[in-house]
Length: 184
Image (cartoon, rainbow, N blue to C red; front, side, top):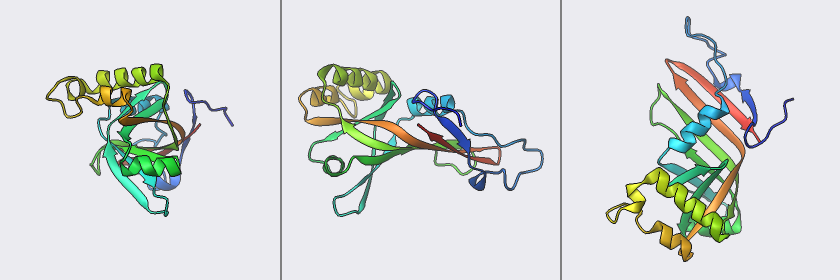
């Protein structure tokens, strides 16, 4: 088995959930999605859904923004928000993103343990990654998330780092479906 790392995880096509079991005539072979393509989608995605677990075991799912930077997904939340409370109790979570389309796209699920980011220089890098990705949404006074950089600096907004442990890709293209698993 090939050795995995954050830059090069072990990649596996799961034929049970791919068109490989029921191929469409003329559609070609079903192949696993390359990790480089998944990373490109993580870099470009604007909205993610965070799934966390409440202390009583119930799930909590909410949309948020996130930045893929240095092999890690960074996201923020207010200290009093439910996801912050959940992560303080149990850091296991998943971030998902994708397209709301049955026929085309790539949906991604990144699972791991979110850890708080407290180092001021790391926080500045996350702020820069947010600003580069979301531009006027963060840098403009009319922007949806204007002021998030200052909120992070004064710890009004908490930042979490989610390093992938396992990730899944659900691809759809021209009626061909693929299910890829990446193990880190």
